Amino acid sequence: MTARRNEIVARYNKNLGLSNMGNHIYPILVNERDNFIRHMTENRIQTSVHFLPLHTMTAYKDYIKEDLSNTEYLGERLVSIPLHPLLTNEEVDYISKQVLASNLLINE
Image (tube, rainbow, N blue to C red; front, side, top):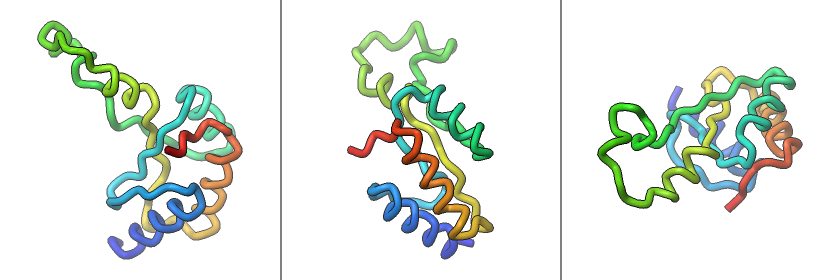
């Protein structure tokens, strides 16, 4: 499973022009996350939001007083695309194609 996940990450990286590491999830940065998720859903691709800025959660909002604009920037734009070891290369390529077709990927 680990080897296949690594292959998928390498394929996404090649297809999307990214250099992500790790094989638990494949997070990407996008503009207009809601529109991106809608585009992917319309093309039958599930996405997830795994990272929310901690200081925006009710339990912490009264404790953080510093400028966390970088955290907020990332929190508004991070979304994960499928990284399941049973994905075929064709499915990874299709997902990649739809990510690019959205014109919302931030490739920095």
